[in-house]
Amino acid sequence: MTAALRRDLFAMPPGIYLDGNSLGLMPHAAREAVLRRLGEWGRDAVGGWDHWFGLAESVSPQVGRLVGAHPHEVIATGSITANLHSLLATLYRPVGERRHLVATSLDFPSDVYALQSWAARHGAEVRLIGSRDGHTLHDEDVAAALGDDVALALLPTVLYRSGQLLDVPGVTRLAQERGVLIGWDAAHSIGSVPHDFRAAGADFAVWCHYKYVNAGPGAPGGLFLHGRHHGLGPGLRGWWGHDKGTQFEMAHEFRPAAGAGAYQLGTPPILALAALEGALTVFDTVGMAEIRARSLKLTSHLMALVAEHLPELRVVTPSEPERRGGHVALSHPEAHALSLALRSRGIVPDFRQPDILRLAPVALYNTEAELGETVRVLRELLDTGAHRAAQAAGLVT
Image (cartoon, rainbow, N blue to C red; front, top):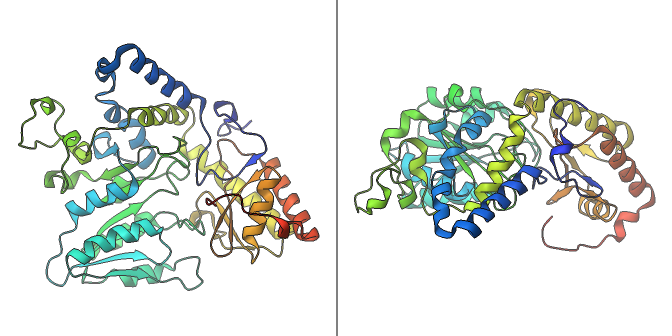
């Protein structure tokens, strides 16, 4: 077993699970942490708040290590969309012609919805960087979008459909040279790709913790705000963002907590935070460099197997290691049927419209043998046409 392979730390469901880029598997430590917090609730009732009051802040050092930030620059709270709204309320300050917002045509929709909400308030545009092939972005197209009339850009670290990894340091540097505030959505990279947002100089970032961080469905999201912006104070205020030392004075004067903690709004979901608390301990046992090395090894192996045995499936994920994240995207006209047929055989991928089959070999718990078996079953399905009889069983793909 390699250092990064830690199947022993996870509850492994039957079959082969290759959907960790949508929902990571449950670490035993996450379950134990939730049970511990449930025990405190049962034993102490409201007195449990003596344990829970600073829970979000207590995990900031571990979260900060995953994204390359000081503890006071990150906080586990909200969701990607809620955190994005909160940060836009603070940072998006259009002046004169510099008022427009930039995203990409390949973004997860919720990011674009949030940007559109703020653009509409200020009579601005949300400009979407186009894709030449429908799957990936070209560096020169990203650069061309960062014009003199752009106030803020929000880009994904990894494109959710194709798995392309963008050049976070390079694009951040270019944006700042042009006077554009730059933020990153790291949903599809945190826990799989090492980040150093502070060193890169990113203004802000948002992410979820339920994919590669394995903190469970509905896990609190996360945000990073570079220390140079901490003097602004949050554009959206809530009582949990108040300074903890005086929060229960119940004063109507908002005194923001130091750093990113000020961007909390309502009372946190303690049981969900407990799952994150437990899940983060996995990353105390293995470093991100080891995780990234094994992730690249697995995705390279999978892409080679597909090239050799599945020529009907087109790999749309970049082949260069420095340009891909943790999952492999395969294009095929019958991708949906193939996804359903794999699930019926105990192999869990996911599907994205209109023709993308996504496979995520997670460094912490997937093996080369599982990838070989997945490719073997796909070959059998294509040879027999058995996938065409597969029936959808639910709404989530």
